[in-house]
Image (cartoon, rainbow, N blue to C red; front, top):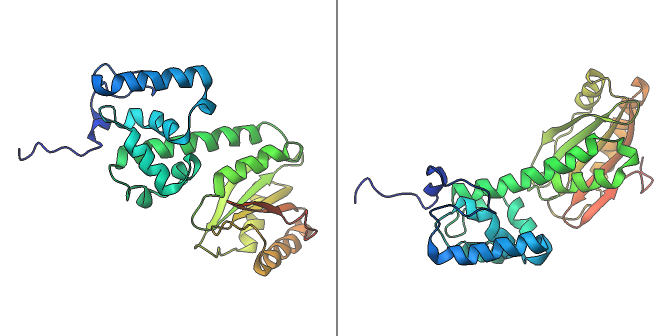
Length: 251
């Protein structure tokens, strides 16, 4: 009927529909409630390791689509992007190319990603960066390795190497980020930081440094050193791993 058509994701805003994906909504259809309950029980008993990627996605999508069978959508997402991690990190326009994926689904997926990155960031904030290097690298890879445009991130540290600020300074294209050396050093002085860690990503997946990466790093080192700001490292992250310019002897 005219005026009664609803978006496929409009259930997101229905009163009483929002709940944990581990709790069945009261009006969940009997057709899917048995499957959902079994999936919830398997997750509670065995954790994420007990579920393949598509079933973990099903759980995530229960809240977004409380009246829909989420298995076909989850399987389409995995078929398109390859893994749970690739799905939650995929850009919104590409996610919406998949049948039955709308705003509610995208919101749930991005919420999962944001929560994971926030948890990793918290572990970095709680201890000196150089004494928890693995956690720093895990966080940086989670935050940036799946980005589809280059970003320059700077971690600003105090004299005890604790994180003062974590900021994305510049955002560029798929293969280039403009870097303003003076702005990076100026920001360090504003924050009274005594050291910085530079981070940027390669959307191609290969974290190998380019000549431009090396030259830019040396310019920042040369500008920061006379002002009492040390450059501890420049980390390049990508889907294939990460590279430390310090480990390569380039700093």
